[in-house]
Image 1 (cartoon, rainbow, N blue to C red):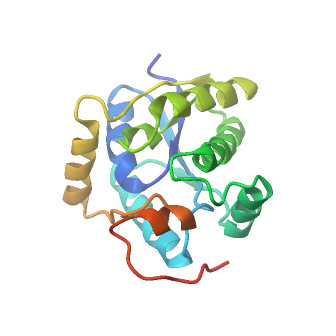
Image 2: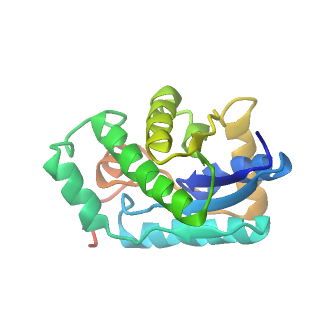
Image 3: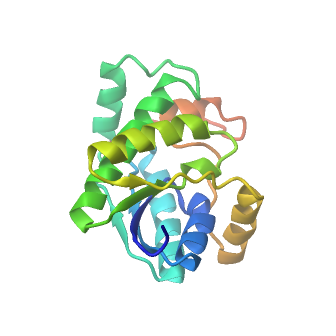
Length: 194
């Protein structure tokens, strides 16, 4: 029910353009949350964080940032044996869980009643899987999951247009080391910066 307090988990600024605009227009009190420990290298993280600040200042919305600890993300994925998983596989599920768990904790801390994510704007992500994870995690924290598939009704195309209008940096890979390796638009190797 619009008009409540909602924490929007934000994977990146371009993907948050449509959700922040639409949720605010519906009457939600929106706060953003950014978890970026999955993003490598550090310079890429900084570019994405800068774009997010630009968006949130433009929208006049608050945003909370999780600490940037990529070594924790990597250790978690290595411990689970997921670093060699194909893109879109079990590593992505574990990453979504880490991000949405951190977002749910922030939502409780900030007094929000609802949780949502910008992840579902991407045509490359499994919206049903993200929704199932979000519902489960929100429920364990006493939150209501706000199920949105943001890519519907040309949401992804709107995000591209809005990103250009706002001059936002648009990345060419999801964020983690393995996703960078498989992205056809990424070239060259780099050393991860922890």
